[in-house]
Image (cartoon, rainbow, N blue to C red; front, side, top):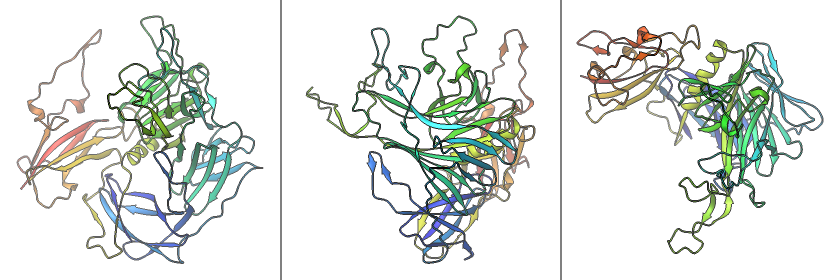
Length: 520
């Protein structure tokens, strides 16, 4: 079978691709016919939304190189060549380590948990324990609503461990990936992986169905416990862009009687959350929006947690009209009032992934997690075709890669054949990095289009009106006088193409510009 791999990033990338296969022996060829290294692993149990299902017994893992804003192709064949199937080793008596070029992870035999992460490049080692817990959901009271679809309200504030004993470990090592598979309970397991050439720890978790037979609602978290002294401060993203500073219980203008120390310090985590001190920064990137916090430890320090699943048995009274208890079946809402909306059958199963980095704080952390954020948001897209030679096995739409701080967010052909909507974004925040946080200019000449660019106009972010026609208010800031924007904010709207002879677009930190391109 032929595999076509699309890379939406504006830089070339090397990545590992996983393909389910029926047998342990496969070979992979690149577009030139050269054989590639392949590692074949026993597949994780296949799951649907509500439980196990039949899946391929093996997974082939191999490295690919994809061009910037383009695609490449590979061929996968069954046969005796290429694949290697490592034998699982159950580690019960001694500590276990896995490693790649960037990280070393240690799992303690006594607890069965991850207990240490070492950044090999920075020679930074930190005791880090990761495990799963669940908060008991409040059932409410006379003046307090229960935990529900819109309310997180644990009772008590101290979570319970999912595992009542040390989780079982299974270790798999090979030339491309090393991983530890842990089973915490019949309804929760995870895979912790270090991949060759990847500066991150990949944690793939499977949670559910959460038990509810005892009548308790459960809100399940992944918790990272560290010695990091973040002193009641953590950072979460704002829709994947600017990182927001979060403080424990901040009320600068009035006295707070905090009755919910956990829920009152939870925040939306669309993409990333991190805690840091002057020695280390622990960053966790999510593959979906979750609630999380770095403020729930003693004095708001050392603990980072993310909520990965919830199953609740009470309605919070805020509009849904039923508890957050998704099951395989539900009786119909027929308006007859006889048992309608009753949930039964297996509960929901969730499988997701966290991407974790441990680095020195500041610029060295940003140059790791910011590009990783782009890779999580825009993973390689895999397409399959019959194993026949592709007419165009390789293509890129950039004559040269863009700098790592700039991405192409949108490249869309509009209804008029000659018009294209282009959206460019700067990916580093102000002051995050001394080099990559600087304003950058992009030459539109690097975009490969079949026709010459005649004209381009900068528009509003949504692309519905020229930016030059939009009124720009002058903000007055209390006690500071007239506010002055950064120089790159005061640039006139972009006009480029053949009439001006200019094709440069300048972007400041985290700035997004939308351009309407008109081709001859």
